[in-house]
Length: 494
Image 1 (cartoon, rainbow, N blue to C red):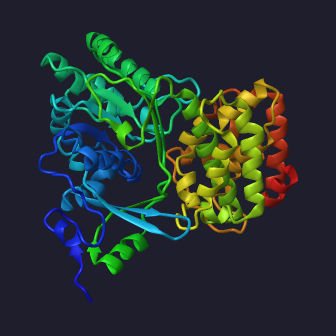
Image 2 (image 1 turned 90 degrees about the vertical axis):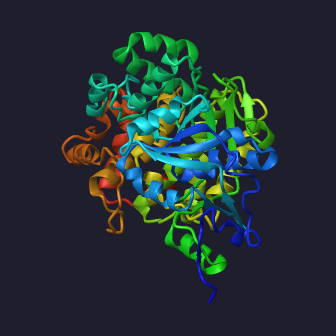
Image 3 (image 1 turned 180 degrees about the vertical axis):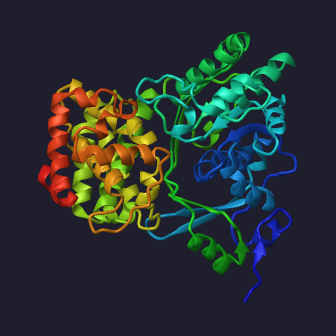
C-alpha cells in the first residue's frame, strides 16, 4: 500500500497531480480578514469563496486568520495549525460525483483563551479590514423574545469590569476597535455570516449595547465608523465523519484530520456596505445588493425552517438523516405544504427569484443521498434556531389569519422531543442544546400544564396567550402524548 502523507504546506506538491491544490502564493498572503468561529460552514463558504478569489486574481491582501474564543475551539485550532491551516473540501453531488479541493485561504489561527492580547492585536492591525463572524445564533447574547442584550451573562459582567481581559466576541471587538481608534487606524467592518435574520443589524445593535455600558465615547465612534452589512449565506455542510477522513486516506493516501464535506450548491448575498474596503467577491459569484433582507428572510423561513421541520419530526419518527426523511413521501409532502401554505405567504416580494423553483431546489438539496446530514445536527441548539426560523412564521400567520397547523405540529413535537428524550420507537435521542435542562423541565410540566412548554417567553413570546395557537397546539400535543405516531399526525394534516 502507498504510504499515507500528512496534509501540510511541505507536502502540498505531493498532491498536485491527484486533486486541486492552491495555485496562489500563500507566503505572500496578508491577513485582510479575521474570522471568529472557524467551523465546517466557514470553511465550506467564506473561506472557499476567498480561495476562489485568490485562485482567480491573487487577492493576496485578503488572507484569513481564524480565531477561536472558546476552549471548545482548541481541537480545530490544533489540527489546522498542524496542517498549516490547509484542509480538503469534499463536495458531494447527488449523482455520486465527488469534487475535491485543498483550500489555502486560511493562513493562521489564534486562540483567545490562550492569548487574548494576540487576538486583539491581530484585529487591531491596520492590514485587517474585516472581522467576520460565524458564532451561531446563540453567540449574539440577546433575549430572543425581547431582542435585548443579555447583561446578566457572567462573561459580559467580567468584561465590563475588566475591558483588558476579553472573553466574548463583544469584549474582543471593543478592545480591538478601541486600539484602532487610539492608534488612528480606520475601523474594520464587522461582517456576520450567521443564520440570523438581519444579522448585520443584530451584530450592530448588540455591540453598541455592550460598548455603551463599557465606554460611551467608544460606542459613539463605533456607531459612526463601523459598517455591519447584512448577509444571506447558504451551503449545507454536515458534520465531518470518520468515513470522510478514511476516504481521503484510502483513495488519495492523504492524512487530513479534519476535512469538510458540503453540497455543490452555494450562495452568498450581501449588502455592499463596508468601512474599509472589501474583496471583489463578485468575481466569484457573490451577489452584492442594496438590501439583503428579502433574500435572507426567504432563506431562513424556507431552508432553515424546512430543515427544522424535517429534523424535529424526523427525530421523533426515527429517521437518522435529512435525506432519509426525503425518502419518505409523507415527509416530502408535509415539508412542501409547510413551505407553500405557511412560509411563502409571509415572505416579501423577491426580485429575480422564482419562488417555486427555489422550493424545488430545496427539496433536491435535502434529498441529496451523499450528504447524509444527521437530524441530530439539524436539531442541535433548536432553542436558538426555532425562535428565528419558525416561530416568527407562526406569529405572522396568526396576525394574517393564515395557516399555522404545520408549524404548530413541529412545536408540539419539540415539546415531546424535549420531554421524552427518546423517539417513538424508544431509541434515545442525542439532544445538543445549551438550554436542554430548561427545555426538559418545562416539557416535563406538560402532564400537569399543557402550556408549560410554550410559556417560556424568551423562546415563544406571547404565543401561549393566543387562543387559536393554544387550541391547535393542545390538540396536537394531546395526540402525541396519547401515543399517536407523529407520521400519522402529519398525514392527517395533508
